[in-house]
Length: 206
Image (cartoon, rainbow, N blue to C red):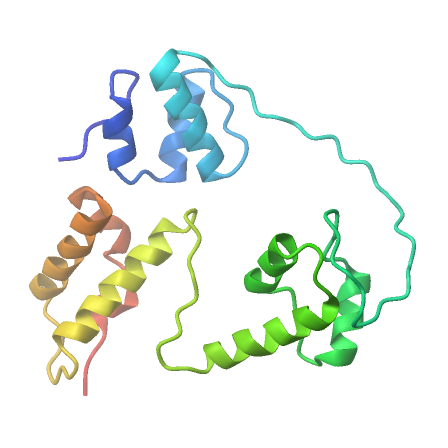
């Protein structure tokens, strides 16, 4: 049974369970902690509070609007440390790759490949596009999207266990498989309520 989120909960116990962002924000309001930022940032503040009792303030970055010079771009343009995925850069790549967009993969490529050229970026785009067409390709889900990862793992179990289902899926079987995924993710059974209205629960099979 999942414990209540209170000041008495241990850090390890807090980390072992899945919490809605609304639950984390409610805990923060009750304890004078900032509720701003992403779910990961809020969780980090709560962990700090449970460990030390310290109320960590969010770091506010002042944004100054900078007018970037419209330099001429080419395939030989080198990626620099302060490279930005701007509209100017997007427009250039669209002249080379008509359906170009700043995917997560490409944004990370810019970030992790300082010193390489835009020509390398084009090659990386087509390599990734080729991987996407392969049946085994799976897009990486970020840690902040726990619910999405949970659904993917559940569907994977259904595919492995029952490749062909001729009758309507029974709720008991579905909940059993949900529990298996929950165990993998260290989620509590109380979170099944979050998924009870998922379309899969009421799907009819031919």
